[in-house]
Image 1: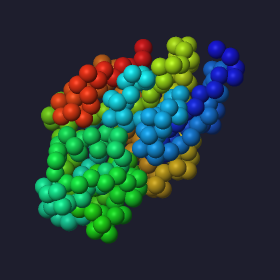
Image 2: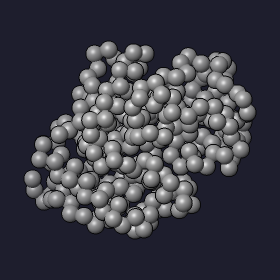
Image 3: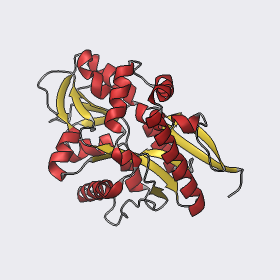
Image 4: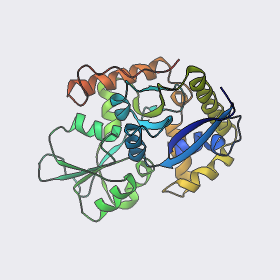
Length: 281
């Protein structure tokens, strides 16, 4: 590995990523001979650009990861999964349920895990349109759609906007699988040499440790990119989404990825011969 090894890194603007990557973004940790070129984008933009082979390493929805198993591996650190972390299915009107083809549900991207969960639990019900996550709740408020799958900070703010909870899709996942919900993780290209992947993993692990030791500093990056500027909401987000499985997926995290793959394969959302998600060791 040389000093000029460039890594095209994509991460999301959501608070758990800007918290975990604050030290990397601001070079507060040793880059270990790597030269990170970082872009922060919406999760569906990250997913799409992974399919376009635009990244060496990137945050991605685990739905996208299921479709990219031949070209990527998941790093042990940096994932978002857990209990009580799932997307919410919201309605613009009270007591409404997704039952008819003339209804419209907004989802935050074709390859997001949120979209996968909606298709798992409400198959062949409503029409689906994909929007940037920050546009979903405003459109529900304006009655431009019947339902929306809400992610990120909106999990904590939907009641302020007079919307109505249909279902916590993460809770349903937990009840049916007895495992934490895998939302997204850090994918590395299989074309990278193993020593480069090891260095990237170490930098991410160091960055995460730095954020835990310096949360008041990390919140500066979170504020910069968040849709929600309330510090209390931002820290709620971190406490929920940055957990033991973010530090290391462990066996329970790996089992959760296997469960997601099995469910997606069973309803033909991924090919029958699709490989399981591989976690780099």
